[in-house]
Image (cartoon, rainbow, N blue to C red):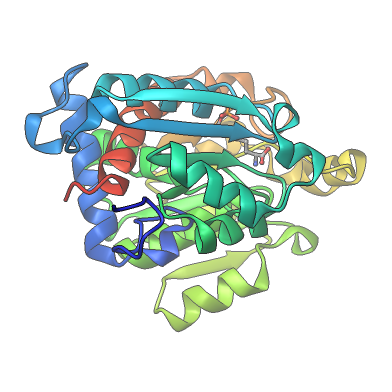
Length: 315
Ligand code: CP
Ligand code: NVA
């Protein structure tokens, strides 16, 4: 008898874009474009084998609108099924070991997607799970978001290779996944952050060693000047408690019309959402003609289908 826990091929975890080689990331973004072009019925060659029998288990330790709903709809459009839980509803929330949870969920489901407080939960799950583990955001990274962002850039501006993307604001989890993506797909990423809120040293060192074109400054005007795309994110991420200090440090990095005008004339504006108008971005920018945030939010759905398909063995 073959139990699910028997030694088998290593699951295709999706924890960080830095774990993927360039060709794999490129393939996932291309699959996301193809998923979108096909509408609600994915192309047959991108549908995982036996999908009707497969279940995606999702656990959220933090709130979510886009990630929760887009993964649920994506799995259904692929033909599979979903279970969505908050961590407080599970024994994880009462301290059951992560490794035990990984082994048990691997006996029930076919993939798991988690939004976690501590990135280490994901890596520990991945070490013990025999099904793919997907990072639905941690304090360190948000790789699913960036697959959607890459496809959004390419829809609006063509291939991202060689482009210049500018980030203004907190050097946070979303910025880290942008750094991974820029390094893998060969585009320039200019980050303007207050020095106290620079990206994690480990992420910058990884990019440097991997040959990434990552430029770090504290000058938002310089970073955005001539860019093809301007990106920002909330000044206070989930779980952060020093809101007033952050708002003070990040004030000069607010993306408003003056700053946006430094970018190329046809530059686009992106934000993963949720957004706080009047803080990291002005209403005139996020609701203005250069903003592609609604396409970006829609593309989470198409990107999730591509990520799920890849994790479940396609491509
Ligand atoms: N961008 C993003 O991940 O949104 P949610 O927090 O709503 O999932
Ligand atoms: N940086 C934000 C992203 C939300 C999708 C956070 O972690 O709260």
